[in-house]
Length: 104
Image (cartoon, rainbow, N blue to C red; front, side, top):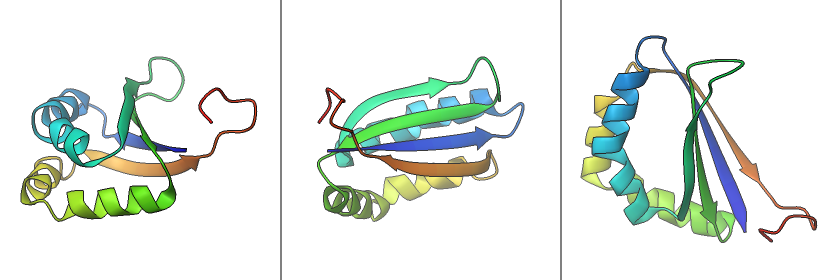
């Protein structure tokens, strides 16, 4: 099992637009194609204008297959066009549970 953490730094003043576009155009597509949706979060303290999405996959191979299918889906491309210019930067991390984690 792995978790994918996707951290988007949204341009100041665009958070509402980004969340609206994701909620109406992006999230349902991702739920259809990707692994288990763990959650979607924003930062309130510290570095602001961040949105973090967490997805659970069985393995890196599972993730690769699922993301490839999603990227080939035409409505996903429409979503990407809708958010163009809203994201300042993005970081993606793959988190692997330790033996102490209940998510093993």
